[in-house]
Image (tube, rainbow, N blue to C red; front, side, top):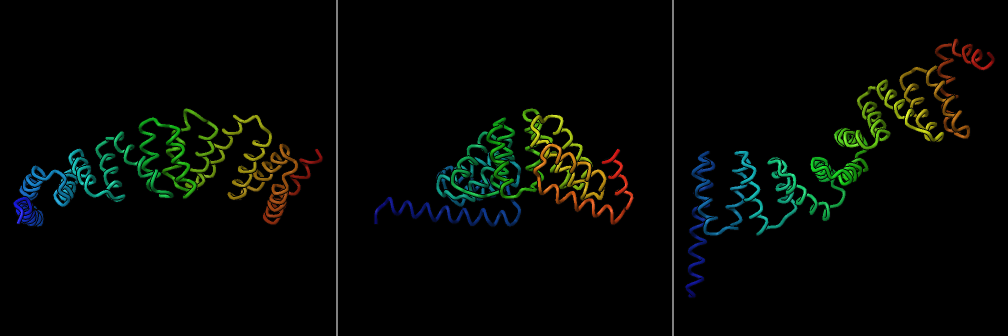
Length: 267
């Protein structure tokens, strides 16, 4: 038999025995001894799959994320898989190495479509690296999948705070609605109104405010907002129908609303 083959078989048997011993030590929680054996294996076979896999897990358990990342990089050299790259990106983030996290996540985003968690990680990483346009793009992807995703809405609002106050206040309003803080949502929308010049856009914002007041049971204020909707956009048939419903609901609960409207119209 060829001497090289014999040597390889001998090395294989040696590594197998050492791996078995390392696993037994890990089961006995003798982590330092197990790690020493595994490091011995990779000193002879740098890209050994099982040794690097176990080392990456040990280093991650020890929160030694730099070494965990190196072990995972060696592992990926031998066994490329999406799950391993997800893990590597997370380890890089845990070690605050966002440049390498970005590199790994970027590659994943080019291969994987429609993964909300991946887009969230990528957006967060881009935001930290001040890659603002990319961060916005990936947060938008998250929100197309999950329109009420509070972390994405909040982080996107933080980005817009210095760059686009209109979008910032729109997002704050959405966040407040999701948190059942409708009064604060209305305050945010009124901040939007101060920044708008276009009548159609003003009409749309008043429409949102009218619906929020209606939702809160504040029919008089809702009706007033519907009047403003129609002032800026008289052709909004949907707003007219909703305003009629508000009127009817208020009259059924509080007949005085009818008198108030008449005084408003004829005084």
